[in-house]
Image (tube, rainbow, N blue to C red; front, top):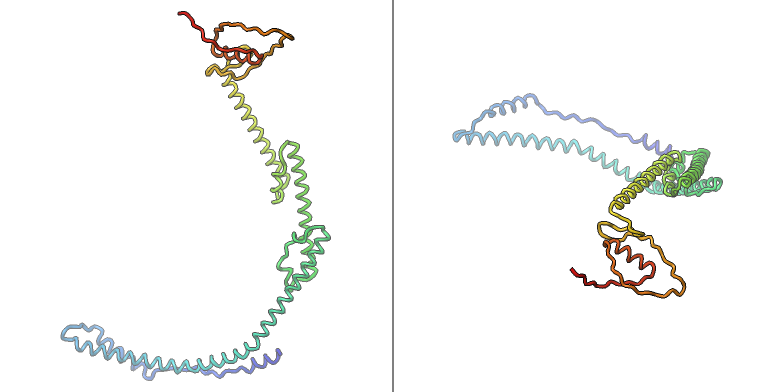
Length: 309
């Protein structure tokens, strides 16, 4: 078939003779046109010369139109052989396409089938190599070069094996790095899980240890600041507190902040007594006394005293 096509190509001969287009007496005609153009070049149109100016313009335009018409005529005659040649070549190409189109379609179908078979073969090989490494085949990313015809089976197997070995190595690295981070984090009393994502992204224990130390230092500093803040607040609060008996009272508001209650243990069958008394003290101490009596189950009530001036 190849020899037959070559014979057809060799027999495709074209008889072509370059055409020559010339204008007879061109130089003489050019001089005449130049003379007429120069003659009217400086013409000034006035009422007296208007009629002759229009006549001159008409003559010059008539000549220009004649030139263009002849040019177009020559061009049509000149291009006609080319148009005929192109139509003949197109007819030949149409005959060729009638044969090549189904051939092209068949080639594409076969190549697609071959591509699918190569892909299935590669997937099978990936599965076998992944199984030998005890890893998920989906972790091995298929490279486009593995599906080409140009790659040898040995090279493809080697590249798939290298990809699988890298996955195994990376899996072991991640496991070891996470174990180291977990041990170090737990030894310092912090949660390790928050650092694992960075290991999955490629970070090492050496890198994360620096970050963990920074986090520990930041936490320590925050704790120290909070403790100092608490101590400062307590110191300020004590400036406005006073202890009366077993109670601590806010000297600004009189509020009893806390009471260290003392409870009295009554004797068995000790009789209950009621006594009236007048107590004179400050408001805060009065509240402290009331809290003491409440804590010991002593019933009391306020009474209105009529004091004389």
